[in-house]
Length: 399
Image 1 (tube, rainbow, N blue to C red):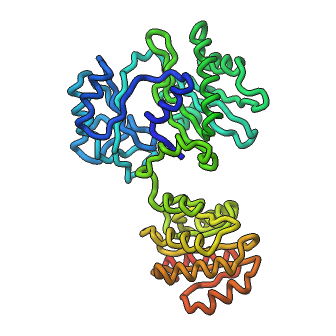
Image 2 (spheres, rainbow, N blue to C red):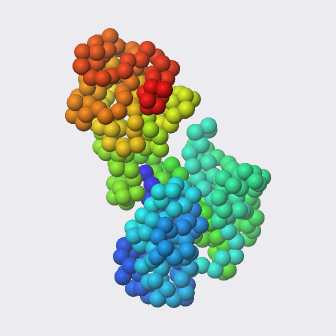
Image 3 (tube, rainbow, N blue to C red):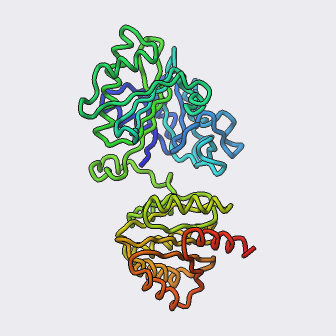
């Protein structure tokens, strides 16, 4: 689960992480009052969307101006003008794609006098099963570009959960950033506080870009991006309350109600599969034969008929779907349950596109019989390769 910058900073502040004072607003008429409350002489007006690259982004509408999604204001009146230009507009960044995201809230923050900019992030390193720090002197830039052009400028290390965070980790960060004296001590405290927050709130990723040194020699988190482990949210109702569903795909929201692992993609072939590995293989083989998957959808090993029906409805709700591939290897999940769920869903929502079904495993013959006797126009497949070729051919009109 992702949250907005201002929410992330509020969470980090609870753990002693230095952030700027700021106010979130939802209406343009709130902007000037928020700016007066904060005091000047400089304010930063930031679009709040779940995507990076806001400062370099551009609004689709001409009325929004051409200054991007993060703007420096030098007067209370200018704060108000920027708010009127930005709220309700569609911001396109390198991470949003061409569709962009509508800006429904802004964060008005104190401006900072910046002497140096750094990059610092934390994430779960699956190779070591530890929390990893990624640090670079190239703050304010896309870390992917830095990794490509100057990999020697990125320092990474992991923290052993058995020992936890230690002073040496702070010294590693200070050394990587060239910080000495009091700034090095500040880096030690910052690293300790960030690690504590990361573990306490079950974060998956924490990115500060940039981490700055101010003119008065203070380390400061100028931006913050945080995502949380969805499987651990039951432990954090305070974090769940921060969820902004307007930033999420409606189909993904619906899928979460049924505990379905669903991710919307940009292709034309809808997929319903059980097991994450098999789902990835299904997506890959669709691409191998020249088409694009419309989604990742894992119904899991113990899905009920109701769950399968819900999954099918979610797939068909995507207007880009021109064909559907159901690929089930029955273990705990029985093929006859899948068959009944598919038939129930088709009879409920109708079937306007080709449907290819490949079943294998537990109760496979029963599942095939149910589909065969349903009277539906379903294309059977013998194996995954056969299924992929058939759905690609069907989507292309049998050519």
